[in-house]
Each structure stands twice: as C-alpha cells, then as structure tokens.
Length: 49
Image (cartoon, rainbow, N blue to C red; front, side, top):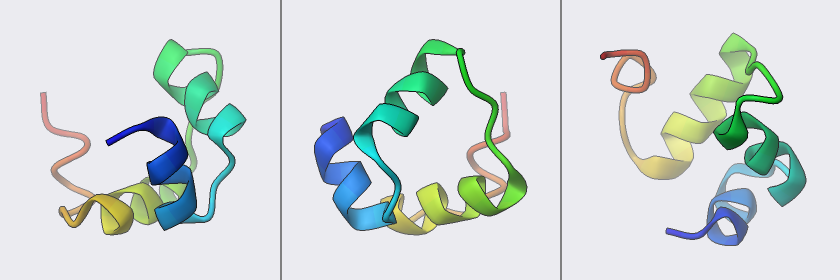
C-alpha cells in the first residue's frame, strides 16, 4: 500500500504519514487507531516489536 492510498483510507495527509514513517513526527493514540483501522489490523499490532 502506498502512502497516498493509506492517506485516502485513513483521512490523514500523505505528508503527515511520510513524517511518521521517517521518524520526524510522533503519532497520537487517535492517529494510531486511524492508521490501524485503515490497514484492517488492531491498534495493538502497530505497537508490537
């Protein structure tokens, strides 16, 4: 999935997602939930090592 596709599914901007991926931004709990929902996984799965 591209950042553009994830942005469309999650309602977040592609620029914001790029910042998360590169470590320049830190997500909130709400953001993690929105990303997990867009990916079809549990928010807990995003935090597992």
